[in-house]
Amino acid sequence: MASMQLMRRESAFVHEVTQDSPKSPEARLGMKVEDLWDVQEPQLTPTEKLNACFEGIPVSAFPPAPSSQVIEIKSDTSLAEAVRILADHKILSAPVVDVDAPEDASWIDRYIGVVEFAGIIVWILHQSEPPSPRSPTSESALEAAVNRVTNAASLGTLGPEDAAATSGNFFEALTSSEFYKNTKVRDIAGSFRWAPFLALQKSNSFLTMLLLLSSYKMKSIPVVDLGEAKIDNIITQSSVIHMLAECSGLQWFESWGTRKLSEIGLPLMAPDRIVKVYEEEPVLQAFKLMRKKKIGGIPIVDSSGRKVVGNISIRDVHFLLTAPEIYHDYRSITAKNFSTAVKGYLETHHEISPFVRGMVICTKNYSIKELIMKLDSEKIHRVYVVDDAGNLEGVITLRDILSRLVHEPRGYFGDFFDGVLPLPSNSRV
Image 1: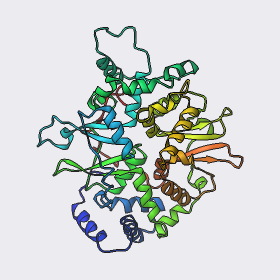
Image 2: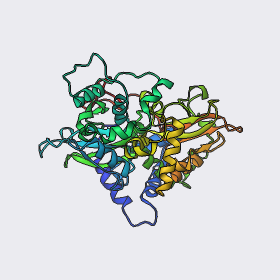
Image 3: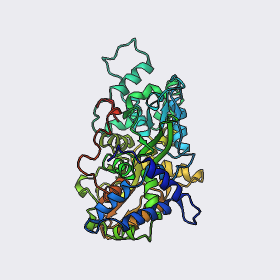
Image 4: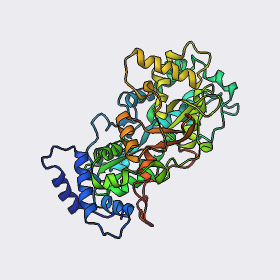
């Protein structure tokens, strides 16, 4: 089960996959799955076989993330600097280290949470709203903002009248203010999801990791070294998709990956339930919907609502804060204006980004393998499914794919979540 110890098996497996081999570390992991696949009971279904294989591999065997992606941010770092760090390293989130924690603190006491773009969006949304007339006048601007973030309630829909609140010079004024420069990461702790965060031990299994990344909607999972009381690795949905892409040609992967999307129930959502933003709506509406629906990206559609003309991901919020000058000439920052301005900025600075290449589409006739290869090569998190006329039929995310790879056995997690609890609902992003 999820909490079982695998130390002996972990040691043997790590030794095995580190032997000289021309294949990538991810491909060697795939070969180990192949070995386990071959010895499974024949009466098991393919999904049951995969479950058993992944339960037999410890997460310590997963290749370490690039050093540029294992980033920690100190609690006294300014929010402006935290945004720059996340943007420069092209990561969605980073653990926050408590600068006041003692040297011998456990990992739970050493970290205060994870700062992520979703939480920063909460902060931005509240800066774009007028202060409540009931707010105490003696409260400082910083205290008022922190309290608004900590007590964030469910937000409604932005309409045309809200476009003025997100005028072209709004973010330029915000990011140049002393208030923005002096806000610390710890000041927005009310936007963190967990206290401090959900983590894996090195002895936990691949199955546990895959279930957390799919069924439990985690985009990344820290792996902690209990002896060192620190994060040893960070496993993301993208890194798992890359591992799967490296397994092309292996029997277990081909038997699963050659199936059509429609055969395995993808896309999951009916067209009329897709969360989307119209190109003339305020861009903050897109980020508000992502925060409210707890999703990582959203399509921009034309006035008909059927044609996808662009895509905004949650990470793109940093363009509002790192390059606010590019919207200066716009009367309001609509989704269309935002997309146009960011593409122009990236092209001028010769930066390679999925934002410049535009959204990626596929049809229901794609195989799961073809989709994995596309997601991995394009370094994106979602693909839009269209019909023969180019009308939007669905969206498939990395999480959707992983959810079709394994399933959660009854009672699997047991007491796994004890001790690391979500913050109250009015504090979650």
